[in-house]
Length: 157
Image 1: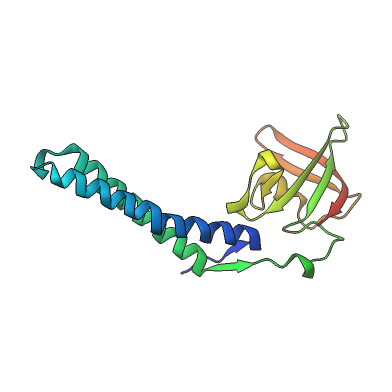
Image 2: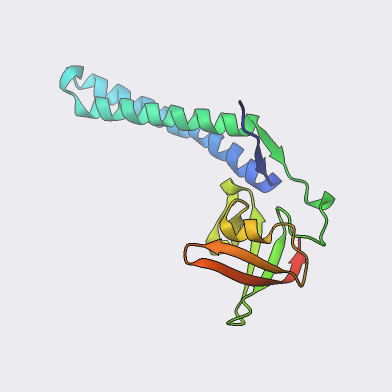
C-alpha cells in the first residue's frame, strides 16, 4: 500500500532538486570512484572498491525512496484553508498559562519540519494537541513529563 506524503510547493520543489542532484552529480561521482578502485587491481582485497560499491547501493536506495515520495506526493494548498482553526500549514502563536511564555510554530508535513525555523511536524505531540483548536482554546499536549496546557493566542497562514 502506498503512503500519501503531503508537501508544500516549496518542500516538493526542494525534494525534486535533491533527487536531480543525486541522480546527476552523486551517481557520476560514485561511478568514478568505482572505476578508480577497479583500476587498482584485485577486487577481492580492494577496500576502496567495496566502500564505493556500498556507497552506490546506499545512494540508489535513497534515490528510490525520493522517487517514491515524489510519486505519492500531494501538495497542500494554503489558499483553500480555513484560518479559524489550527490545521496543517497554520502558524500558531501559543502561550503557556503558567509561565506566560509565548511560542510561535508553523505546522508542516513531517519531511519539512525544522525546529530552528519554527516549523514543527504535524505528527509531533505539540502539533497533535493544537490541531482543530481555535483562538482562545486551551490545548492539552502530552509530553514525556505528563501534560502541558497551552492557550491558542493567534492563528495565521
